[in-house]
Length: 491
Image (tube, rainbow, N blue to C red; front, side, top):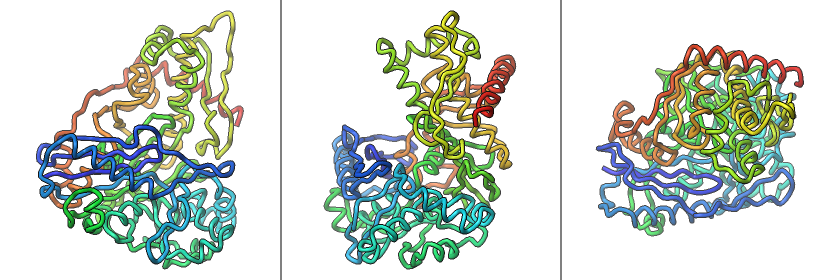
């Protein structure tokens, strides 16, 4: 039996075809070949046309079919992963009313901050486990305040993955995990937060019906089947935001496990078995996809904006070196970069710093001692130290992370980066050959009941294990301690 997974990103749409019997991905595709455009009509805004996501789903599916010849009748389900925190508004005819306000749009920050103060810090952190912040609920309130002519025509609001499910099935629905990522979910009441909706004056009827993250969420309509050239009636059986889905794709389902990515920005997403929040709201908590009535599972997410972008900035400045050569050269000097420190906070406001725009900085540069190797190493150390600062926040919430899993990509391609991470965080790192679209396909197989959680990850290849080493751990913890002292002196 085969399953299709789609990963709806802001730069591209990825699709994967999984053979659930072997657990192997037999085809994958990305569309478009160039990054999708993001409209920025005003400073701090970020919008996309939801219909463009659907068109690229169609294109990616066509690319899949060209790679392999399979009997479409043996496709057992479809899974969807998607960019989190976006807002799509449709009318009664299911027509999009305005461009989607996507995850990196910051227009609603002040609205969320106002709600945080009005509702009370303790209520928000006890019930929402987050500040309303710049999440979907606050973006909807922005439309209420600034585009009343749009708001009065809204029949339903959706997250990006909900919209793709609508295009596939004709049905409007969402998940509890999705409601939590939009800041709509009251964790204490296990229900939509009536207090937040009342404060924002949002009609609960605008929210979609709730379906399980795993399970039938509708079937492929005749119109969608024609567009995709697949048989009508294939069930949609899984849906999750990109970070919960990344965790699923890496088999991160239980307390003590964490998934991480280190692309342009870096994320650590850890599973917790208790409702918890950071009192300064520097990390965010959502309902994890593996949560059920018997097993409480929340996902706690920290993000460092300045991750791979810091390393790529340095590469562009140097101009005459590739990443492999940068890694090799950086490894020629010792931990601590001979006293040189880099603070990679140059990619906008950092939530782990209380939403400060601290700016990146290089400190203790000595023209007589430091050269390229020290700078190259200090950048990688600074990135890891920033991620570890977020891990310290999570530790303060009671999370005990023993194992981190990641895809073999981006910064994790660097042996030095892996060494610094494992020894600073004192954690085992496991690297796998997987991605979000494959995770969505595995989720679809689980949701269809074709495999259980234990069987879903057969065929997934573990490429590498990095263990902390006692001597290196002592060195990196000492260097990190000095970096942390310097950071705190500037906050």
